[in-house]
Length: 289
Image (cartoon, rainbow, N blue to C red; front, side):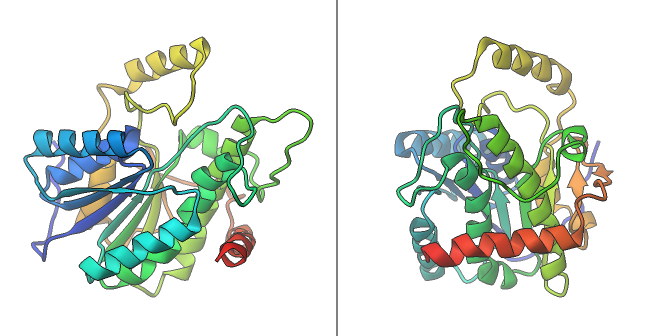
């Protein structure tokens, strides 16, 4: 049995993007059971309120809030940050769990690929907007969602190409976004190394209601059943543990598997490439702002 080492402090506050289903909702529930104040983010208001009420019912924690937001919009993310600043002096935990898989090319009003925005750029935007509040925490933590470590370490590690080509391949863009989230973890751990904020990425195992917004094929559903069989009895509440366990207070820039074990990243995920991704991402941040 895993026993978390915790320090009694002021009430902790956690933000979970993509908190209305899948990994985000599961992590929100686990944190709510630990009496953390929760703010879940999602686009669908009906789904968000349903998730909020389910979390309250299962955790008996009434400090759960749903905030509707379109993460494709930097403007909405900045409005959310302004909203937070009117209510809270600090944020302790940011779990950046939003994700989607769209088979067809779908553009935002700025003309960007939604697969790229939701699976990577929105994470970059949200993190940068929330960092000032995380700095006010006793110990701020940023957690991103990864994938099976074998997949991460055997992916083609490069900057996003965002090529549409003649035939759009949504899974390719999602794969590029996964690599970018790992590189972002490396970049943030370096840029925040002299602060009270840590950044890590983890594979959550299999979560039953997680389909990343995709209209799944029979093959994908079959894979889901197989993953459920493999992971359902082995899953630990890893998001909650990485958010609260004081064992990880000084751990940053790491990839965790579903058993909360640190997995060494391929040397391709180096600081130089991570820094290039950072500057690549800033172009989108500044051009829209």
